[in-house]
Every structure is written in C-alpha cells, then in structure tokens.
Image 1 (tube, helix red, strand yellow):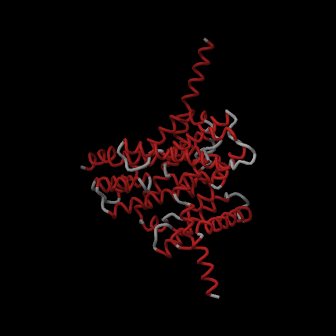
Image 2 (cartoon, one colour):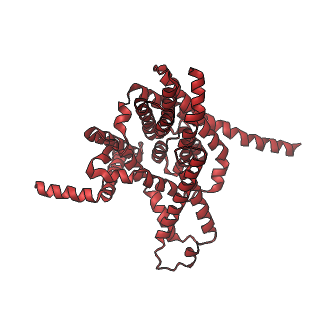
Length: 145
Length: 257
C-alpha cells in the first residue's frame, strides 16, 4: 500500500487498480482452495466471494485514507463495466447441445428445480424480513411501557 | 479470393481474444438494437445478448461436436477465453467495487440460510425426479441430485461415490439446463419474486447457486444486483460438493437401501 502513497500526475495508476483487483481475486482463490482442502472437498469454497469481500475492504480502507485516486479506480470500474459482454461470451461457450441432448430426465430435473428455487426466493425473503420488524416493534412497545 | 479469405482467417485465429472482443461487441450491439426497435426496450438488451450467445453455443456444438459452444470453432476460440472462468470471476469480483459492508452484514444470515436451503431443495427434488424416472440405486440418485444443484456438484459427487459415466453426463446436463434456464428466465420472474433489492439478490444467489446462471440472470435483470447475488452463489458449489458425497449420500442410502 506504500506504493499508492506517492502518486504523481504522470504515474500509470490505472494498473494499480487492476493489480489491486487481481490481488483480491488471487488472495480469495487461495483462501477458498485452502478451505476446500481443510474440509476435504475437491472445489474452491467461496474463493470468488472472499475476493469480493477483500476488494470491498481494501477500497473502503484506501478511500478512507484518500489513497485511492480517481484514475486507479478506473482500473476496477473498467472490468465491472465489461461484465455483461463477458457474461455473453460465457453464454456463447456453454455446452448447450449436451444440455438439450441430456434427454427428458435432465430437462425435468433442471426445469423443476429452477422453478422450485425461483418460488422459494420470496418465501425466504418474507421469513427473513419478519424478524427485524419484530424487534423494532418490541423495542417500541418497551418505550411505551 | 480464397487466398485473401484464408489470410483473413489466419489473422482472426492468431488474435483470437481480440476477435472475441469484436464478435461479442457486435452481438451486444445487435441485441440492443433488437431491444430498442423490436421490443421497445421491454426485453432488456443484455437478456437478448445472452440468448443470442446461447443459440450460437448450440450452433457451435452442433457444428463441431465439442463442449465449448461457439468457442470450439477456431475463429471464435477467443470467446472461450473471454467467457471462461478466469475472466468471468475477475469481472464478478470487480462488480463488488462500490458496495458497502453494511449492506452485506444486514443480509448475512438470510444469505447463509438461503445457501443451505437452496442446496438441499435442489438436491432432494433432483433426487426425487431421478427416482421417479426409475433410478433405484443410491449412487445414481445422489449424483443426479448433485447435478440438480450445479453442473460441478454433479460430477464431483458422482466421481467421489463411483457413479457410471452415463449418470455423470446426465447430472452435468441437468445442471447445465438449470444454469441456462436461470440465465434466460430471471428477468421474467424478477418482478414476481421481488428481485429488486440487494437483500433479495443475495437470497436469490444462495437459492439458485449456479454462478453462471445467477451472473447472467442478474446482469439481464439489473446489473446493480450482480455483486450481491454472485457473492452468495460462489459459496454454493463448494457447499454442494461438501454435502453431496457425504451427508446427502448417507441420507439417500438410508432411504432407498
């Protein structure tokens, strides 16, 4: 972080933003891999999610200290604005043919599970929303008492 | 003439990533034109772009017999790199820029609950359908249940408990189909399931789980929701791979003997 302390106008700071993003991702993936090893799973557990948390923490910290210059932010913002094209490229490189050729069982499993999970979202949403509302009402009642 | 065409193709193949930028740019432009002029903006441009991508992926698979959609055609190989896991995850992480910790902390628990519930519902529903279709051995049922979670959980689970390659392929197909459905239909069901705020997006990510489905579906619904959904979704496959060959397998084995 000492690097970011002395930036002058002409410094190539955009790459600092990209590098910060890269470090967050690599750190997250390494941790995710370690968690996977620890619990004995052949997969990266939450590596990308940890990377996101690391990026939020790093940028909040640096911005608080005024060290995240406008231009090095561009190095991160560029990637988030190219996100949709990347998703389009991802869609174009899916194995759509074998998904369809998987036959009726694959279609049934994929279709019904997707439908059920969609339907569960508002249910869980409402369940989790009720709790904080209750605590507010309770504390208000206490004031009335 | 053919010589010129050949040298053009050589240039495109040699610079495949740059070709991919141009190709994807063209697809996105086309999609937004269709969105404005044919649907008057009712169907979001990125939803159409993803749909075009999926159709091209089908054509690519049909032409080459490969598994990477359009990217199996040498000229479009760069699309596979651009849309591959590395750059996809890089872009997903970058979307977290600008969101605040307080937002995530507020949803923390419901996000975690949605993850466990999402994996379990997908798994047991998938397993039940496998049973209904005549699979009676616990290994096949568990593997197909894993595929109902994501197309990674299926094969990882199947490999761990010794499923046949036919069943593993089936579980991948089920997971792929789920990812595609989530990509395509999220914008349509968004209003119905209240998907218009960070909290619901985090629950949605944990419930659906498929990173590519959630990433594509939320991008086509409202790009501002992407980081929240992606955050929980990236934990889903890991949890599925943990529970599939262990906890879920034990339960299925107990149920079907």
